[in-house]
Amino acid sequence: MKYADFEDIMSAERMGRYLDACNGDTNKAMMGIDSHALLYGLDHVQAVCNKINKIK
Image (cartoon, rainbow, N blue to C red; front, side, top):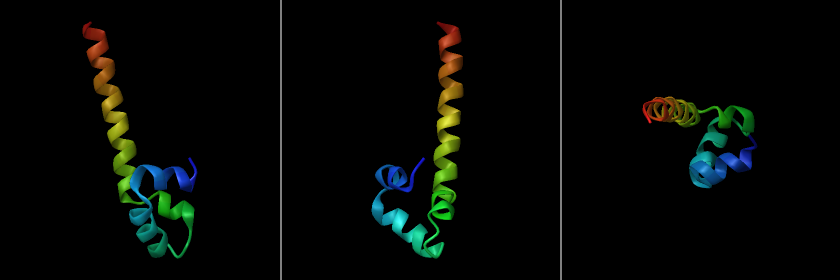
């Protein structure tokens, strides 16, 4: 995923704060706490959807 994609998802303002905190390193900024939570959330949603589909 590219930095611009993260800006679209999280907002340019929020990602700007991460970028400042990471001294301009976009890779580090993309791996901030919120991106981990976002990825964990997507995994969790996928697992729940798989369980629901098995019930159908």
